[in-house]
Structure formats: structure tokens, C-alpha cells
Length: 245
Image (cartoon, rainbow, N blue to C red):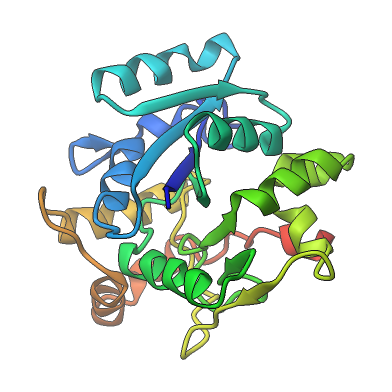
């Protein structure tokens, strides 16, 4: 069974251009996103799925230098990009990753993969409704579910956000949401604004050590000790994606 993490990434960003190369502890953001996935025991392969836009040539060049598997597809139809990337790399199970989340927890990813396999689910996630910090979102699906979404969805919102067809059609897919023991959805551990970046830099300066991995509890310990860190980006609004289902 081939379990592939597919990272959707591009250089263009309205609020934070070229954030994939923003420096965190001496490495670009995208390096950290990929590095953390290497610590997930269940993932067999990591693929960087970017667009055919020439603006993303720089990202492709970087990936080649870093020996990262690459796929280029539609800029707007991200569902199509995911489907063709999954097909090219013979994925049986797909872990959807976004390139602005440098705090993904590999142990959390592994636990959801195991839950999907154990219960033979089509789709598993931990963000609908959200109870984890934004940025720890985890969405994992079988290739058959992704293929069905790709073949049947004609909605632009669904095509832009990959998994929305699955959320909207619970009658077609066996799916499950995993909730955190305590609701931490008010915390924001993703990078979409300068405030997010400032918060992430502080956490990385305190916790990052090459060759090692820090986990959710390590970040929470820092925030509990220095609560002002979480206030830096607390005014940034959480994604309203799931209100559009």
C-alpha cells in the first residue's frame, strides 16, 4: 500500500508573496513542511504539487536541488492537480498537506492513517468541526475517493479546495472526524500573514533542532510559558472554508 503525502504549494500568495521561501531558523518554510513529514512513519513518499505557472519555476528548481519529487498541474483546479499527482505516483492513500503549515505533527498524521486503514474508511480528517490548532489540519483519503471527486465534481469551490466534494457527499464516502481531547481551535499555527510568520519564527527559534522533531505538546509548553506568543496572530481570522459546505 503506497501512502503519499501531496503538498500543494505555489509562489504566488496575495497576503504573503513567496512565503514558501520565508526563513525559519535558517531554512525555507517549504523545507520545514517537507522535513516534518519525513518523521511520519506511515508515509512512503512525499510529492510537491505545484502549478504550471512560470512563477513556480523557482519552486521546481529548489525541489530538484533538494531531490524532492515534483508534480506540476492546474493552478486553479487543485483537485485536478492532486488527482493527477496521485495517479502519477501510484498513491493508494493520499495525505493532503498545505505548504503554509510548518507545525504539522507526524504522530498525529500517523494516527489518522492507522485509523483510516483499521476502519477501512474512504476519508478521515480532524478539522470538521475543528478542535486542533489551525495548521494541524489533517485530511487523508483513499485514491478511489479522490478519483470519484475528480470525475464528478463540477463546482469551482470544490475543485479549488480538493476535499470539499467529499465533505459535501457523506452518503458516498465512509468518513470520520477525529477530535482533540480539548478544544484548541482558537490557536493559529499556520502562516498566511506577517503576524503568523512572526509567531512561527519565535516558536522555531525556541524549538527547532536539525535532525530532531518537536511536537504539539512542545509548542503548547512554550505557549503556556509565554502566552504573549499566541497573542501575536490571535486576531487573524480562521479559514471560513468549512462554512461554505
